[in-house]
View 1: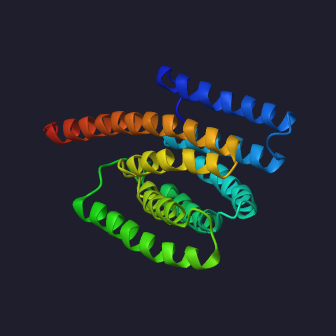
View 2: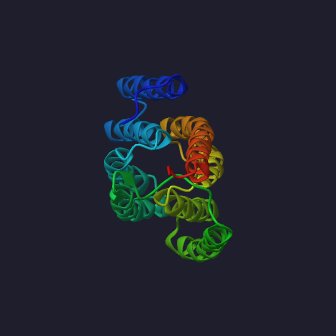
Length: 229
């Protein structure tokens, strides 16, 4: 894991703030212990993802397990089901990030190809239409937004598993939608969490873009260096 750098300080402050807020909200009776635990593990998971740390996956698996129960109780069936799929994708992503080629991990931060972006957007559009129809028949509240956020989140997780910079754009869009959705559903703590996630996602995009530039510069520099005679 990388040594804590100055660019990590805002993320650490946000993560610690969410922990204190979760403890306070639970103590005041405004959030269940399960929602508070989901809040904390979610914030830690995003922070670790911003740092491109593989430890985001085990923490993320705990988070989605807890949130599947929280969302089911709130009748957000799409989000509850999404957590199950997230669990599977998290296991897959964990394995992908563990793969190594010699001393270097196989998965490196990079930009998405046009084909990858097309597939991600196409999946989100088609999945939104299908899930919307399915959720309307189950009585799910906010069925269209539920389907839209579910579809974009799945596409973003697929890009994240491949360490694509554009995955953060998907998370930013989702977080913008989630904040008012959870306020309407009465999940105030979760709405605050996703507002924090939105800020973290912006930081995540900037940090991954910085790391991508460093990797690209190092690769270009090594390729331009003439071999020793």
